[in-house]
Amino acid sequence: MNWRVSFYSAELQEEILWLPAGLVARFLRYAERMEVYGPDLGMPHTRAMGEGLFELRLKAVEGIARVLYCTLVGRRVVMLHQFRQEIREDSFERSEDRTEANERGERCGTL
Image (cartoon, rainbow, N blue to C red; front, top):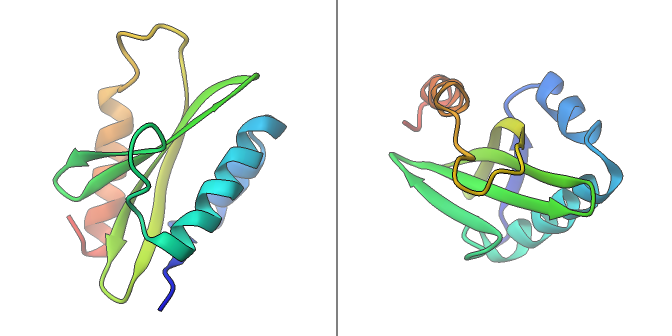
């Protein structure tokens, strides 16, 4: 049985599709893999962040982006929040991004 990938909102889906082409291509490729293999693609593609929150790690010529997501009963993956990462390798996680994703996950009933 395959997994189903969805978005928290139409706005989020639009934000992701407005990322630079290389990042969108990576997102689509990884989302397709998630539908077949599940939400844990392993490093460097995905990472568990704790409390039921995960990140999809996108890297392309245009830069780095993250899409935070959670899983729901019934083999569902819900994309919660996206942001472009600054080039600095030492600090990618902004607390406001994690807070926003946690709030959306709580509304989905997972966190």
